[in-house]
Length: 186
Image (cartoon, rainbow, N blue to C red; front, side):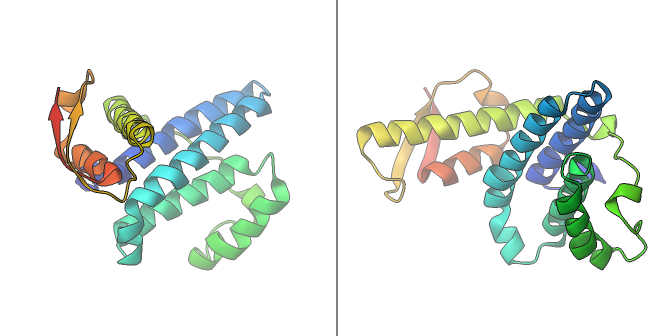
């Protein structure tokens, strides 16, 4: 079931499972600072990469993308509940209980998430991290050359270890983010 999902859905769900595992460890060590930092990083990944890269799917009402986002938001709500009890309770009542009337009456009565290690894909995490880094470097090169992103370019040359293992879908995301027709290895 997981492998039939689009690559970005598999990536964010993998990152979610890593987050659950690491936040659980941080809470067990009474380290709310680390838990908060991990959650903030995930929220940034969710909003600035997953949601932005999937926005067309959301506009089209793609059920897989919407289900993935809902799962992320639900698990985030549960993970954040010990630190921000009132906000998470509000989210639980206004979002989770509306969609799932049989859910526990309160976020604080719900079971804490348990990481599913079978849904963690370290290679996919590394590939998406490389994709994001290449996009960041490409944007920096455009800025340095004073060539706006809106101006399409016919080609970009890539010199990065790990480039060959990137899937066509991830390469297409780089092209799309950088507004480049083709990407070639240097």
